[in-house]
View (cartoon, rainbow, N blue to C red):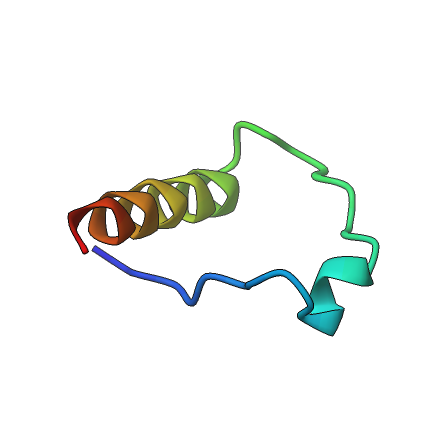
Length: 46
């Protein structure tokens, strides 16, 4: 379980264009999606 930092409104990184996902079914993409799920679960518990 990896919990990532949640970026808040006003954070300059939110203005940066993200990279296109080359392979949505890759293991790396799956890990990021799992991290997102874990992060949201922890945020809801607070």
